[in-house]
Structure formats: C-alpha cells, structure tokens
Amino acid sequence: MDAMTKKELQIVATKIRMAVIEGTFHAGSGHPGGSLSIAEDLAYLYWKEMRIDPQDPDWAGRDRFVLSKGHAAPAFYGALALRGYFPVDLIPTLRKTDSILQGHPDKKHIPGVDMSSGSLGQGVSCAVGMALAGKLDKADYRVYTILGDGEIGEGQVWEAAMFAAAKKLDNLLVIVDNNNLQIDGTVEEVNSPYPIPEKFAAFGFHVIEIDGHDFEQIEAALTEAKTITGKPTCIVQKTVKGKGVSFMENQCSWHGAAPKQEQYDAAMAELSARLQEWEG
Image 1: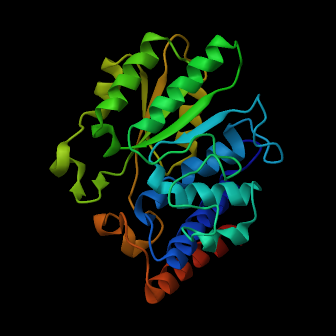
Image 2: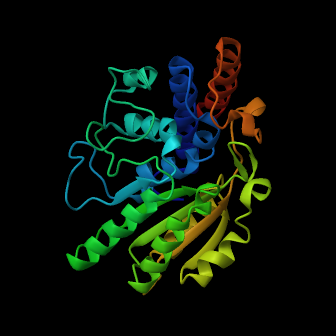
C-alpha cells in the first residue's frame, strides 16, 4: 500500500473505535456495535480514497459520502473529528441537547456531513440522487454510501438499486456492512437478506466480496470499482459487530447499548493497548 501505510490506517481505525466508546459512554446511549464494524471503511475512505477538503467541507468538487446506516454516527463523527472537520473534544458531547453531534448525522449543523440520515433505506436513495446529479452535471466526483445488512430489508433500498443500475451510475459505490446482526438477532432470524451478493448482481450491480477489516482487500475492491463502467458497484463486506472490543464482538446486545463505567474502562484499555502496539 502506498501513500498512507497499513500501519497508519490501523492507527486511525483504532482511534475511530476509541471515539465510538468515548461518545456513547458520555451520551449514555447510542449504537456502538455497528459503529465499531465500519472503522476500517471510514479510515480508508477519509484518509486515502475520497477527494475531500476538511477546510472547505462544501467544496463542489469533493467526493460525497452518505452513512445510510445513520445509527453508526459515533464512528462517522470520530472519523470527521480526527480528519479535521471539527474539534475532537466535541466527541464526548454526543447526543447532548446543546451539541451539534446528534444521534444521527445532521447535514445542517455538522461540517462534512453530506446527507442527514437515520431513517433506514433513505440514505442510499439520496446517494443515488447525488450520483445522478453528478452525471447530469458532467462532474467527476464519486459517491460512497454504507448500508447495514439489516437495513437492506427495506424495500426502498431495492428501488434505489434498480434505479442506479438503470441509469448506469458507475460513479456510485455501495458498501453493505454484513456483520450479520441487527437490534434483535441475526439477520437470518429476523428477515434473511441472503444471498446478498447475488441480489445486488441481479439488480445490475458489479459486486465485490471482501473481509471488511482487511485494508488490502478494501484497497483492491475500491481500486477495482473505479475501473467499472456502465454500472454501479456494490462491495459486500463480512465484518464483526463490535469489532475491536472483545466483549462487544458478535453480540447483538451491543447494537444500541452504551457502555457503563467498568465497561468503558475495559474497552478503552483494550483499544489503548492496541494503539500502543501499532504506534510502537
């Protein structure tokens, strides 16, 4: 990997995870599980992939990002703060009434947020609209969006997918975070979306399957996506809900529960130790 190294990206991903724990602990609420599973995505997108300018968040030529699974905002806010869109010391104000960092991304108040999201299924539809606008304007920006595997149970997702393929939106990259858990069980138990890759392929997408915690695979997939013409690309990534905090991993109970003091201390100690390993 050139430019930013894998080690540097691992450091960023770990710091994003620490921001997730910090924010949800101080809020006493939030969604740590599905935030922790997308730390590598956000690290790679915001530090290596996307054309952005934190000093000019509304720059017309920037690449766009939509967090369709808007409840994973704690990770998104961590990435934006660490990337310089707003001060890192705002992270503990998550969900406070006088904070810009509300429970779901808010385009009106938060620098770097391209779309207010949280109503599942709607974010990807807006991303499709942004991609279409880019085509109509003959602009060269790309649009990236992350969906949850539970979220794709929403019918609106498939309407958007059908439209994206029909309009040949090859400037659109959809990432499905397949951590296999949603708020009340596994995705199979609730309403199985499987097989996910075949579904997106049937809707006209170029599909790539990866391990979403492997930076080499993320890089290869995003590089491949930029070579595809005439159709949108979907990356279906296998991930671990709660990744990076051992007692949260693969536990649907951490979908929407905040850590208490003892859990906060244990999680931060574990992440701090990992950070020291990468920085050492």
